[in-house]
Image 1 (tube, each protein chain N blue to C red):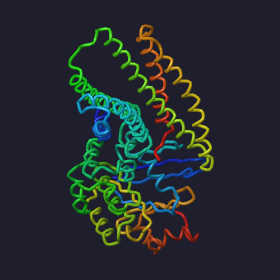
Image 2 (cartoon, rainbow over the protein chains, first blue to last red):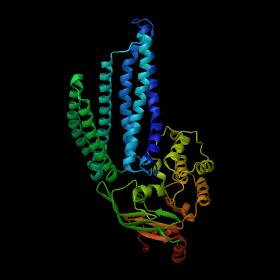
Image 3 (cartoon, helix red, strand yellow):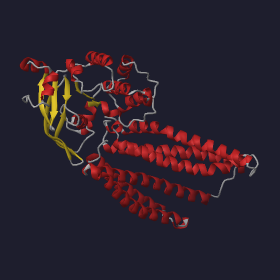
Image 4 (cartoon, helix red, strand yellow):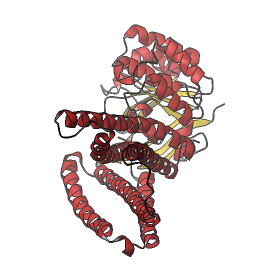
Length: 237
Length: 238
């Protein structure tokens, strides 16, 4: 039987090219933007130009990769290529989710390194106050948990829709899909509104342990449901 | 050895409120080439998906060897449709490398032999292959595992008749004595010479399961004529 780590390695390797491509595109886009800004006469040619040009692409690239990884993750549930492998659905689930996280973390680390180099070159080395690091750590933790929540939630919606659609006559599938989308939009709007409230809270009011606990419970519940659906109902295309 | 290697008892499978297999029963002995015959939509691919374990919403029991577990069935069977969903921008070599990691019973040496015999260039991307070459690649991957049951779903589709004959003779030379190979194919005449048994699917059931030699001796009919007779309504069941 194939083990979780083996499967994780395969999935990380298969998706790493998407990470590399995204990093390359953000760098190329930064260079092109910096050159255009220089020739447009809006700035003098310096590293600072790259520093400012890089920031929006860092975020756009992150969003793009986040969605691409979610799509790749969802394909895994319904493709023979992955579901034929002799591994339990729980292990496949863990491997799939973990490889998505790993690839996204790799992207964040590489882009953070580039950003840090540009920052140091532009503004020199200056360590912020210790209290700032705590805030940064909290924001990073909450962002990480949010990503995890969204990926598992997307899987839940996908697996539920595959399950429901397998029971419907083929002529009613399109109608059911729209009904599912409607329910998802309403549910997601509510959930993301709650998340947004969390982000808007001042740092001092954060109880990071409580937030972590709530996320963990929600993650465990959604994941249990996902594995159950994979075990009992979700078949390949 | 006459142990039933593959068995399906009272197998019923429904999808999108459409009954595909209904109370199907099948017992197959190990070590044979088995032809799974039936018209389009008869349920050949579905039966293979069920045996392999990628389709799970059925009633009844499926057993390969002594095991009914889905994970064990995936371990004990190698299915040619397992390539569905692979990133077509990957090279054949990259796909085979991943296969070797994901399937502990995958033999890279056997794969190399197959790709040489099938004249496949492993540096090519999957997307660059013709339909016939894709089928050859899927067959090479499937047969490179060292397992008990091989499920080949129309492996010769899109392959010219000369190459088809060469592939069949390669398959005869390759087959381990204990392995069971189930082949579904619309060109019955092309594969008939390697088949030890045939299973005919019609109206959601197995309507015939015969040893090919006995069939020829007892009925005086060719396998193809026998199979086609089910669609003319002139043959008796097994």
